[in-house]
Image 1 (cartoon, rainbow, N blue to C red):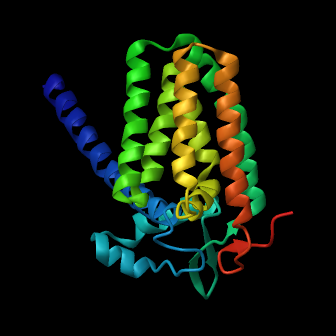
Image 2 (image 1 turned 180 degrees about the vertical axis):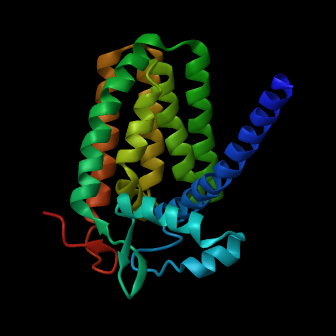
Length: 242
C-alpha cells in the first residue's frame, strides 16, 4: 500500500511539475520569437508591442506574454510606458558600444585558443560557414547572413574549448546586433566581412594565435566602424554617437 501511495504521489508530482513548466516554456518561446524580431528589425525601434495581438497570434494567455515582455524590458529591448503601452526601444549607442567592447575582449581570447586547439575537422567546418556566407551574398539573402555569422563566431568559441564564451557574448551584444542588421545593406560591407572571416580561418589553420588575433581585431573593429557611421537616424537611435 505504501509503495502504491508513493508511486501515486510521484506521478502526481511529475504531472504538477509538467503543468507548471508549460507557462514557462511558452514564455521562453514568445521571448525568443520577439527578441529575434527586434534584433532583425522586423519590429523596428518605436514600434508598438501589443500584448493582446501576440496572445491571439500564438494562442497563449497574457501570463507568458507578460513574462516574455518583462525579460525584454530587462534587456532594454522594449520600453513599458504606464497607461500608454509597450514599445520597442531605440538603439542606445552607449549600450551597443559596451557590447562591442565586451565582445571584442572575449573573442580575442576565444580565437587565440581556437588557433592552438583547432583540428582539420574544425577548419573544414569554419570553411563551410564561409562558403555559406558567400552563397548568401550571391543569392542576396541578406536576412540570413547574421545567423550564419553568429554560427561562425560561436564555432570558434566551441573549438576554443570555452563554448560558454559565446553565451556571454550573445547576451552582451543584443543592441549591437541591431546595428549589425542596419549595416548589412551597406554596399560591399558583407562581402568584406566575409573575406575577413576567411582571413581569420587561414590564421587559425596555420595555428598562429597572433595572426588569428590580428585578423579578428581587424574584422571586429572594421565592422563596428561601419555601424558607427550609420548612427545618425533619430527615429532609430537614442541620442548620438560621441
